[in-house]
Amino acid sequence: MDSVTFDPNPCVLIVEADETLAARISLDLKEAGYGTVVATDIRSGWHQANEIKPAMVVVDRVLSGESGLELCTQLRNAGSPIPLLLLMARETINDRVACLESGADDYCLKPYRTEIFLQMVRFYLEPEPGVAEQIRFGDLALDLSTRRAMRGDKVIDLTLKEFQLLKYLMMHPREVLTREQILENVWGYDFMGESNVIEVYIRYLRLKIEDEGKKRLIQTVRGVGYVLRET
Image (cartoon, rainbow, N blue to C red):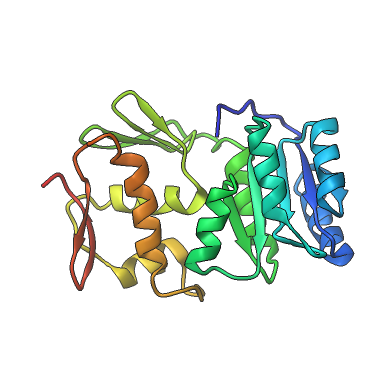
């Protein structure tokens, strides 16, 4: 995701065939201070995205026989840098991979939950107020205001969960963290996803911060969990 200019009243495009869900999402966004536009299918979603230039697009993966992934791919192929958030009913490995490959930045699981959804929206559209702090470990830095990572001269965009996971690891450097500790502190007590969700996100983080032959920082402690260390 490219650099974003923050708009105090950004407009969010909702592409959702379920009128009841679309109305609920729209109301939640309006009460949180956002403008909204609703489309019900890919064609109208594409038209509105080009017409109103929204700050974010929220699209259901399933749209009355169509796939919301197609809209994400179309927008990315057209060069659109805006955040794309998928609504998904499942969180399997294949679902997560399909989400990323379509160009979506993140996903929110159904059943729809207002608090979690708005947390994701704010993550992508609003800077962290009153925060001017970085966490550092070696040549890796995490900016808490922009919520981006930097390794050397490279700026690395993160999804919400990638940011939360990396922040937790960087706040406990060289400390072996169990899978249970990570789930509790990053996903919370009510996490009901797959048991390998941590492994999947660790792999995503490694691809982003350890590319181009850079030294591995996130180490696996077999049978226990993970640790952030240089050797």
